[in-house]
Length: 213
Image (cartoon, rainbow, N blue to C red):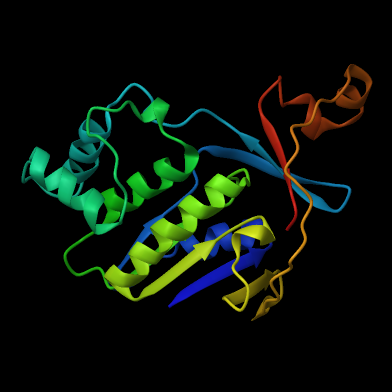
């Protein structure tokens, strides 16, 4: 079963970082900050971490932090297969989409006793292609693990009649999937607006995404 989480992004990030028995978690470290703008959440995006590493090198590095056993190429491919993603081991991390990057993080967190996954997809820009890709990859996770928890920051990622949870500072409640959502927009702030806002003055031209959350 796939459960989608929508709502307060900071509470969700804390929730998804919790360590649980027999679970694998993947965070969103490429999101540097978030703030509210006209009632909508805005994400400040950084570069993809470990950008100079190849996917196979990153998986070997991440696994080395958990076990002394070296990770073979076949073992790295199996990790990717287990989380339902097809990415060449030679591809640079910097060349991955943010969706692929989060799934690589999940592959690195996978263990033989993993029975559920917690995947934070907040800060990923919506597009029809990304929605199709995400649903296909999440379906593969559901077949492999049964219990999948995924955080999203745009209602359009959530299929109709899907299990949805709304997250607030006061707790969680049954969420409602909206059929209409505003598009992500790349925002440009003029000099006066940047000077008037401490949050905006620290962006220094970084990519920002406005989402319907």
